[in-house]
Amino acid sequence: MKLKAIPLDCNAKSMELFPDGASLTRAGHIMTGNNVCEYHTDPWIVVDMLGRFRYSDGVPVVRCPESGFCLRGAPIVAGRIAFHFRNVPGSCPWVDIQVAETMPTCGCEPYITTRQLRIVLRVGGYPRGVIRAINCPGGCTGLVSVDRDRITEHRGGACRWSGIRIIDRGWYPPILVPE
Image (cartoon, rainbow, N blue to C red; front, side, top):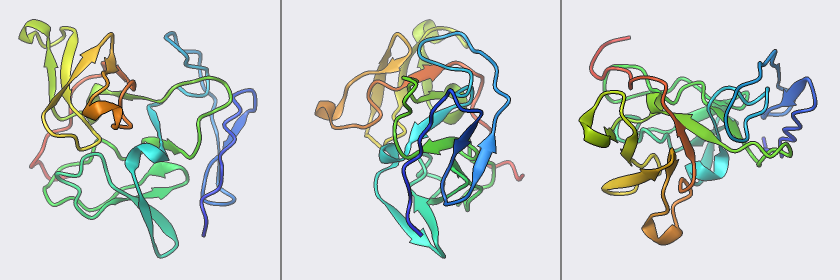
């Protein structure tokens, strides 16, 4: 099975997702914010941000951004990160995140939420303060600065997660709590 380009034309009523033949119709609703159309209302990323992928039983498997706890990789099923093994109890916050193969033609930009991030530091240490630094989902060492809700350029500009928008949507799921 080969991944194919996903024409995420937001003027269409459905988006074609990989693998071949899978599709998802979204009712969608208009969301305020920069470059978000009515069909990109859930967090989504581009497969290149996850690095290389391999196939297991015909299903593409990528490095889960939560690689500290998801050591065996994460399968992509119907264009989303699917349930996968974790070496600690608890749910992976990346499950059900949409993964596109290419950037959409509508001009929307990939984004994630604070629910996907294990470490989020805020200005003044306030629980709902402005985000100032995160643990990069790309596996970069150390904390990475956040400026105007976007991951700043780091690792000499080599990190694929630089420039990705972060939307504040609550806390990371608890670790060591059985599902």
